Amino acid sequence: MNCLLPTDFDRHDDVIVGVIANPASGRDIRRLTAKASVFTAAEKANMVQRLLGPFGALGVDRVMIMPDSSGIAATVERSAQINRSRGESVWPLIEQVKMKSTGGVEDSQNAARIMRDAGARAIVVLGGDGTHRVIAKVVPELPMATLSTGTNNVFPDWREATVTGIATALHVTGRIDPSITLRRNKQLRVNLGEYTDIALVDVCVTRLTHVGARAVWDPDTIAELFVAFAEPDAIGLSSIAAMINPLTRDEPRGLCLRCGTEGRRVLAAIAPGVLETVVIDHCEIMQPGVRYAIRTERGSIALDGEREIEFHRGQVPRVTLELNGPPTLDVSSTLAAAARLGVMATPCAREMLR
Image: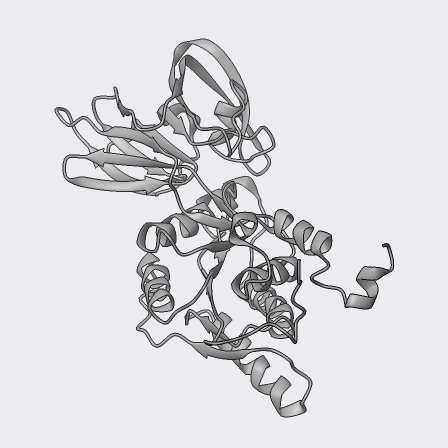
């Protein structure tokens, strides 16, 4: 195979990558109750800057970044200007997305749409499960490179930004085949009448009848739990299911649990530093494409840990496991392929071991 080096691949259009750094991620009530660390705006700005070196070295032309009131985007843009003035930077062109910021989830969604329409080949997302969920909802086919900066981080990678930057650049410049670089994820779809929404990790049915504080942190309020995957080393609600029946991201099935007062007692890490006991009286495998009725008569539904939906007697929400969820960058596979194919080495270096 003829492997492309950073300076010799054929370019036609600008290679554009979007960056969405959610300024509110990692700042909800679970951070206070669990004494977990907080990702500051300064650290998020640093993470974005650690993406830019690999982007520039490997041929990304433009980076579109979501504006925010915390100063993340402004710090990155200012650093880029300083580097250019000193002649020190190989960073790509940085531009803030032209949009009005509201401080809500709509910012991430609006930015993602604008990036997609501008021709971005991928979006690097700094946030937690909720941030990735709302972006996947509006641009379901645009690949996401995930970086964890939220509270209960199950869906996004906990990884050094530099490495994610390398893998993202290798993907968007076409140096590694998408069949290697991208992973198709499962998702859970909730239907309530005409209303529909998705979750990437879990759907939690609570006995709380009003949304109020969105985070689910009291195990006594949990009535039912649906999970797309359940990893034993995860933190959050999906860890409850993992203690019953571990489930990988690649298995074409999900899991449905019902909580009660009698049954199997499970001790799970539902938040950083917090282990709680949950009693499970029913567990079954979810098959893809089947609509599972929620049996709780009234309450609220959390999507990836945040309560979004209220329902009442006479309403029957249903949950479906779907296998055609959003594509995400598989950093490990991408870098393994780059090493195997010699993408990051000169021809002379490749011949050394032959």
